[in-house]
Structure formats: C-alpha cells, structure tokens
Length: 122
Image (tube, rainbow, N blue to C red; front, side, top):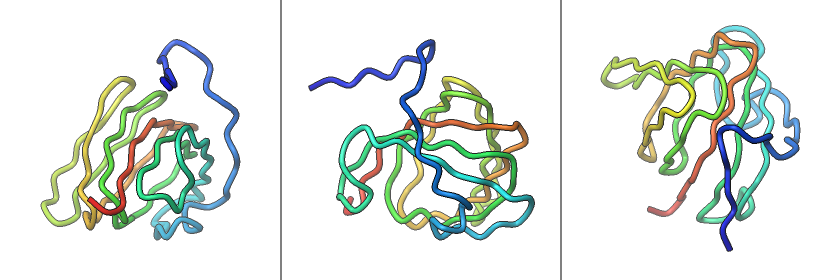
C-alpha cells in the first residue's frame, strides 16, 4: 500500500494531544500544543509514520527513536543541545535525528507541521 502525502494537498484530520510535555518534552517557553495523525502503525509500534503539528513555543526533548522528518507547513529551529548547532527548517526541508539526541525546538509561527518516519529499535 502507498499512502501519499503531497505538500500541496490537505492534511488528514489531526488529533489534539495537548501540551508537548505529554510526550515527554520539557517546555522552555510558551505553551506549545501538539496534534498528530498516524499514517502507519501505532505510537507503541517499532516503526511508525505520521503527521505531527505544534503551536508556537520552545521545548526540549530527547529523541526516543530514530526519526526522518520533512516540514509540511511553517518553520522550526532545531538546536542539537550537545553540539550547539542550530538549523532552521522550512516547508520541504528534511532532517534526520538519531535516537538519544537532545534537541531544542523553537517554533515561532502559529503552526508547524512535519511528516515523520520513526523507528524505535534501530
């Protein structure tokens, strides 16, 4: 089965899950609220694919999985806490984050959306 996700098409309906702290993140600034839609798998599965959206705010998280992600809407600044390197990503840009990486997220737009593929036991 192929599940297309096209940058110029509407997203599937997203489920509001509340504060990013519900996902284990530490809020640094604001009140970033997250929403998700699973495309493949369930959150407890080894391999998942889905949509993650978040409102304005700043938070830290340690990646509990390996992730490849692409910005679908908005922009985000990601800082690798260990190296101090910050990169700003915009619509169509992608990144890979290894499991165990601590990242500072900075979302300044009202809404940021990414498409991701995550693997827990890589």
